[in-house]
Image (cartoon, rainbow, N blue to C red):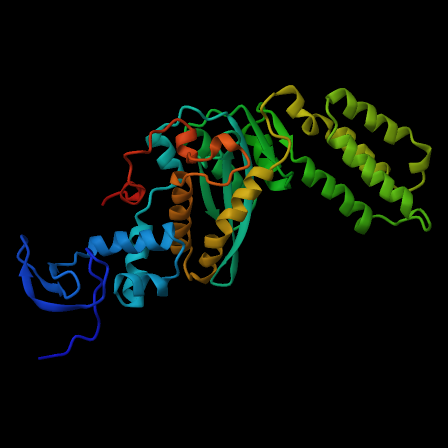
Amino acid sequence: MRKCKYHLRCPYCHGLNTKRRGKRQLSNGKKRNHWYCHDCQRCFTPYLRQFSKRATHFYYDNGETYRTVSKEIGLSLPTTYYKIKELSLRCKDPHEVSAELSPSNWSGYILLDGDALFVKGIRENLLLSMDASTQDIPAATLARTEDQAAWEILLSLLKDKACYHLKGIVSDGEPSVWAAIDKMLPTVPHQLCLKHYHSFICYRIRYQITKVQGKWRSYDKFMFDANNMLFANSEREVKESLGYIARSYEFRGLGLNDIIKKVYIDFPLLTAHFRYPGLPRTTSSIEGLISRLDAKINLADGYWRHETAWATLKMIILRYRFKKFTDSSFKEHNGKCPLELAGVDTSKIDWIRYSQRTY
């Protein structure tokens, strides 16, 4: 008799003290190995679908590696990877989930940002959209290049497929996303992230202009005054601070005229949050989301195909949408998941089963 080279984990006591005991004929006529557990003295017949779901749970819910998951469920490493990949490839897109569940509590204010990752050594970009009040992700896409066309695709998915009613947009001022918004949604209020804008001013001063020697204190004061101007408490204070900076004798002759002129041009986009209450003035929330997803997103760097990487990212995003907050800075969010905050009853939804287009 051939000796069993591996042991399956018992689904009842989760022990590995098991051995094969004959075969069992299924209703479709196929035969499957029957197993006996010496610890709990119970028999069980493993089903591949059951293994797929358990492996996916360990990998996405518990954040385990493929090797750890394979040891936990008692399957080989290649088989474990294949089972998780199989379910991931059938996962629904974020906009499909949004269209099916139809959340009713979205604020209408959307934050846009992207995150870079590498697939087979080539840089690709995960483009995300996040609702400002619920921190839900109505739509996302994995683009090979972060250009205007890619952002137009995301905005189209958001508007037409996810049925998201846009009231305002917050972006980091990236030229490609700026151009896409101006082309597709010219009438929707657009707010530039103030943190990114201040970083842009500091970068221009430090690296792109010819500084006057001996005036470093004046440059530091300009950056300090620019920060106070951007984060003022009212639109009137912003205008007054900008006027003071433009008239200040101390800042004359420092080569800052182009920067001040650009601030005047971008003034409506820097103060939109004053005219539309509820519109955030920074993209900090979505950047925090990207940092939270990075632990799993970075695992996609090892994939060799665009489709496999996107399948994994879809599962990560869906898991985030169903996972309850525990350490949110918004205390009222703790104990609820983004979809629940958006008005969806998730108490009876098994997210892994729901993720599949056909289970």
